[in-house]
Length: 218
Image 1 (cartoon, rainbow, N blue to C red):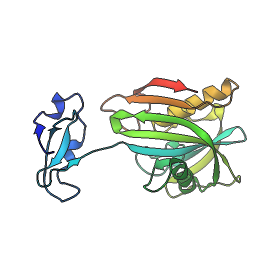
Image 2: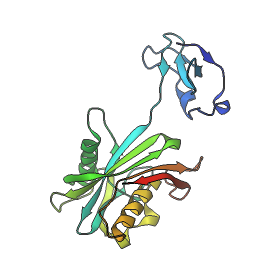
Image 3: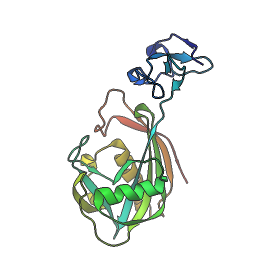
Image 4: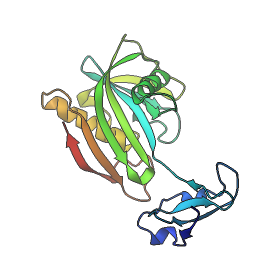
């Protein structure tokens, strides 16, 4: 289980960017070594004491695209990264909740809004930073919302006034662009899947250095 080849991350096509930051075993606390385990292709952290391998998996971000009176609800971030920029209410999925439950919770936390989910709208994978976004279409149960602890403002924007140049992340730009395209085409919003390939070395708040690949809709 602990046998591995001694390739460096730069020599492996399947290396992971931060695996070398894993210095100790999460199970026994023993020191780790780094390499490609036998029978695998990716660079891993392997415990030198118990032999267990540390697997790093993508994080899931869930949120809501809230429709109300032909407008969408955005929150202005009061935390880093992307402080002062606009976002859909979204955040990391917690253990023990479904993606839809997490999206509803994040909306309540960031916008003090109770919503009813209509349907899934987009799944966007961002391999470079190990994140997958799942965004749901939703509607307000009541027309009440206000900034939560991580937001400084909450506002409904008509589609032609969405502040695309002041959005927080490329995932927000892509999600809202797809939504506007669907609505301008006079059709019911579709479900979209795509891969956001960010340019290596760009910051989380860089909303220009990316491409949307493998876009599918149904």
